[in-house]
Image (cartoon, rainbow, N blue to C red):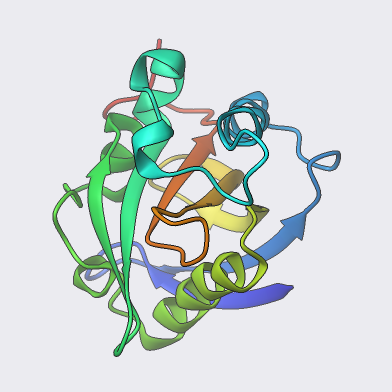
Length: 178
């Protein structure tokens, strides 16, 4: 699945042109994405998906700055972020915990493409791994890898997601490691 999305970096600034590429686990180069994928596989314990209560933050503590947890709402389809790690907040430039996806993805095309990724996770009832290509001048990156994993309270319907975004920056930004 390839998508092209315009994402304004700032009100008066230039736009970045994004392209999401879906990857297999083997094509993924991010160790953080691989670790979350492997953890999701481990905690599902033979079920099609783990439940939110199966996620233990102490097991993945080193990934927490890059983690987001969100919930799925249907009719109309919407995503609400329950929490977002410090690296995600720093990359976006504002807090997203407790906010709807539409609160910070205001470009209609960008929103549609992001929602299509969540719908793909729901349809497959399995993680989707990807790489976003483009230029995000604020972070000094040309691409980043990510994963969205489904969670289910009854092992049938997707109710929540745990995801991760791994940015590798050439320049320092608020929240970037030393």
